[in-house]
Image 1: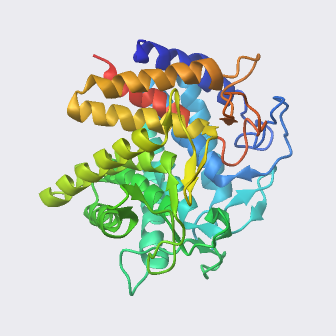
Image 2: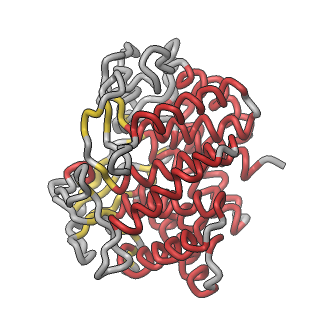
Length: 392
C-alpha cells in the first residue's frame, strides 16, 4: 500500500468534502449533528470543541493543499469561535451553543480551552492574523493563572463554571468514576502548548510545556504497566485499573512532538523511552489486526474498534518508524489503514467514516456521523501526518 496516495485520496475525496458541506451559512459555524442515517439535524447544539477541531482541520488542510475553499471554511470556523464561543465579559470559551449561536452550556472546561489554543495556533499559521495568536496566548494565560493550582504547580483544574469556580468533572469522567484530574485534559494541554510554542516562540509557553512533560513522566505514566493512568484524585492518585489503548498510542507521538521545545536532554531521553514503551505495549496488548481495540478495564477487554483510535494508532506507529526506521511499524500502519478502507469508510453516497465497529467489523452501535465529539480532527490529522512524514 502507498500510504501517501491513500491518505491524499481519503482527505481530498472523502473527509474534506463531507465537512465542507456542513457549513452553516444562516447561523454561522457548522451544523452540529448528522445522524447515522446521514440526515442532518440543523437545530442541533454546536459543541465548541467540535468547532475548534473543525477550525484546526480546515486551517491545516488549507496550509497543506493551498486550497482557497478550505481557507474560506477556516475563516467561517474562526469567526464563529471568535465572535460567539468566547465569553467577552469574563474570558474563556463556553462548552456549547445552540444552533443559532446562543450560549447553551456555559461550562468552561480546561480541555475546551486547550482545543481553542490548538485551533487558533493553526489558524494563525495559515492566516498570519495576529488577533488569532493574541486570542491563543490569552487562553494560555487564562489556563496558567486560573486553572493551574497554586499549591501544586503541575496540576490543572478541569471543569469551571462561567465565573471560574470549580465544578464536578462530569464531562470527562467515565467508566463509573468521578475524576478531579484526567490524563485526557493533560494530554490536550500538552498538545495545545506544543502548537502554540511552534507559532509563538514564547518562552513561558515552553516552560509550561516542560512542566507538562514532567507531569506525564512523574505522575501519569505507569512504568510498571507501560501505560498512562487515566482518572485521578486531586493529588494524581489513580482511581481505576484501565488501559486506554487509543490515548496511550496518541500520547506516544504527542509527547515526542512536545520534546522539540525543551533543552533538557535527560527529559527528552526519558520521554522518548516512555513513547516507545507506550506503542509497544498497545501493539502487544490491544492490537487485534487490523485494528486496535478500545480499552481494558480491570482485566476485561472492550473489543470495540473506534474510529479515532485507529487514526492515532497510525500516527503513533509512523512516529516510531521515523525514529527507528524499523519497517515493521510502517507495515502495521498499512494493515490498519487497509482495515479503515475496508470497514470504517462509509461507502454510502455522502458518507465519511463510521464512529465504531463491533468484533465483526460492522457499525453496530449506529452512533452519529457528526456530533460534539465526532469531528475531522483525528482522521484528518492522520492523513496530513502520513503525507508529511512519508512524502519524499
